[in-house]
Length: 235
Ligand code: 13P
Image (tube, rainbow, N blue to C red; front, top):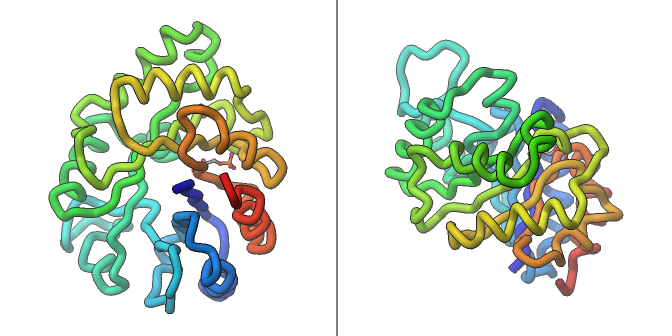
């Protein structure tokens, strides 16, 4: 089954998130062939009424139940809304918020232990891509250090940093070569992310080794997101 995930990043209010979720939930009422995840901001997590293949996840949380970690949320806050899905290792957290591989691995182990579904992101920056496929794969494999890739509830997302939010989607060849290399080592669903759009989502999701997409910008307008879901119908 194709997996389509929307990462809101730092977008949407509580009100617009609620509208988005109920709009998507309604569309999915009659669509059972796609698994959909939405990652709103932490402030917009709530007890949404969902009766479809839609799951709400957290973009981030600290590896703790509760405590003194100013600015962070833990499982006490996630439990309030029944959140059991989390995004870990996103490049914006690695590069902008400075999360190290060690911290990411610790977070991964914590949420794995609690049985969360983990969407684990990997991907190389432009200067690594420019060095070729071998360097790219070497960089990506470093992002698996400390990560139990045999974990049952793991979904991977390959998101080349240079393709995120730039409008420059990776080419089919780029996607296929990285995905097949990762897939040969790790047998888990593997999403592609990085400038996926309404018009290219179907073509990307039908490539060999691509099990779905993790989408930022193009997913934030609810009508566009539903159009994305319509476009991948039947794959
Ligand atoms: P864009 O779709 O905006 O390129 O973002 C991709 C992404 O980072 C999803 O997590």
